[in-house]
Image 1: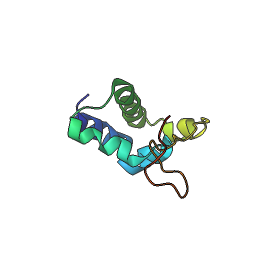
Image 2 (image 1 turned 60 degrees about the vertical axis):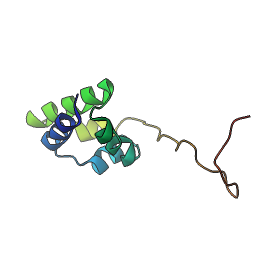
Image 3 (image 1 turned 180 degrees about the vertical axis):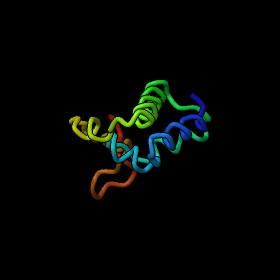
Image 4 (image 1 turned 135 degrees about the horizontal axis):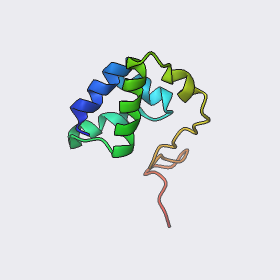
Length: 90
């Protein structure tokens, strides 16, 4: 799915990028970075398309999604306390 269509489906669902990220416990930058690529991954396309359709039919997807036990993603390359340069392997 192209990024513009992704944004259209978000609009149908009544969500901003920030609200989607909060709902799915992700970093908003994870979604805005797809704008430079021009496309979003298929799994994300399915999620927002279903949210848009559910909203069109008066179904509350927020209650369903917020009821899921979604673990937040850990930031990649995050620096350890008092260590510059992130968490290097090896």
